[in-house]
Image (cartoon, rainbow, N blue to C red; front, side, top):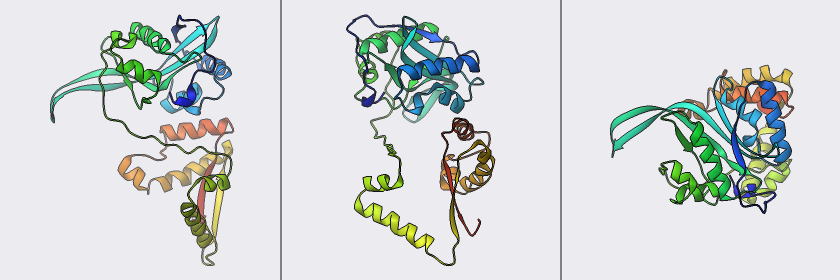
Amino acid sequence: MTSELAATNRSRETAPADWTPEPLCDEAGLKRVAGALHEVFPHLDMNYDIEWLAAAHGWPGNEIRLMTARSGGRPTGLAAFLASPSQLVYALGSYVFLRVGVRQFKLFQGIVSERGDATEVDACFETLSKTLPPGAVVFAGAVPVDSQLHARLTDRSSGLRRRFHALAWGGESLHCRVRWQGSVDKYLASLGKKSAKELQRNVRNLFSDPELKCEIRRFQSVDDIELFLKDGVALSDKTYQKRDLGLGISYGGAVERLIRFAAARGAFFGYILYINEA
């Protein structure tokens, strides 16, 4: 949960809301829950969109454990956990002496609530502790240091710590993202002058070369997706991100699922640069 996801409507009550597991039985139920959450939290980014998350994670083949807080039937809090098989590794230095198979529940993004206080984090994890199968572990990745979740994880007297044995993994790191403001010109203006001029110079040199026929094609509709994937996967296969990091576009993967989902929503923009029709 980032600092911009602070409480939108802090309650004067001191008691936390009632957190319960939210069954996601079918597509209709998923859409119903997603719609209700969007009405309460309209400004959350796509990573808190339950339908988007389901498409990325391969639901219903893979489990999503959704926890919600409700008041009078209206959702007031949200936490989504992605379930997958994993291993708990016991090691002494570089020597691994035991590996145990576990069911891992990864907290996706963070915990969101209208109140935004620490009691909501404790209440969510108290309910979660009663629903997890034996031997399950919870993985909270990239927890912002200024969040209530981080505060409860590091406070030994918190309700979260009374129910879970918390272990720190890794140090602090900086996560960055581009805030798109609607146009390339605005993006260039947000960069340093030297970087913006370098990008603009490269574009001029490329498109002014008389021996190169350069064209940027945009793919947006559902009907465009097959051609975009055909050329996009072929390009992705040649990149170091795909060869060395295992990232990029692949048929049957999460990226393809998200591309098709976004196109069906009218929220996909794909661009490919063609030079001399290649």
